[in-house]
Picture 1 (cartoon, rainbow, N blue to C red):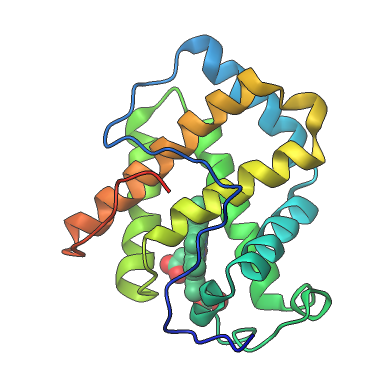
Picture 2 (picture 1 turned 180 degrees about the horizontal axis):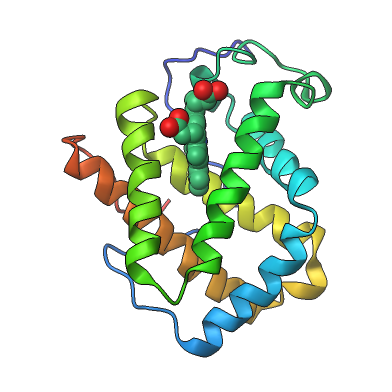
Length: 186
Ligand code: HEM
């Protein structure tokens, strides 16, 4: 199938991430569960980050339009070698790590995510919907790669965190004047 970079992403049916316009803070117990499970994921930071992005770009090829180095690549094995992809994988994982390490400090979390949101809105002009899609892919890969650490009740908590991430990121988009940020569930 010919990929037209200007078309909207098709929504993958396996992604059921529901996003609420405002989010309840995580409880202490939930924070601890996030930190413990993330510890397992982050041990494999490089591999997990790359798997997440490959899955994202293969399932949602229009998301590649923003990346000069692999926007025309189709072959996942070739994408995997792209330094731009690997670099972004590391940045995504490190940003999530900063969020997880600072869950006790809501101001730090919002400032980190506001910077991410602003850079993607202003510099990279990324359609914010892709953040929601990427969150779903991330949870999917974590669950698949570490099933013993992601039973259903842990997935619920992670979904809550990812909703908060999306809420902060899109808040920054709105702040810099990006209209039409969708807050409805995928
Ligand atoms: C949780 C999600 C994400 C995080 C934490 C994240 C993080 C980052 C960071 C820290 C940077 C460098 C900051 C800068 O340029 O000032 C970056 C660059 C970039 N991001 Fe993201 N990102 C995320 C999602 C996305 C998505 C969904 C897309 C597009 C589909 C995207 C596209 C880009 C592009 C095109 C760049 C510039 C790449 C380059 O210069 O090589 N990001 N990202």
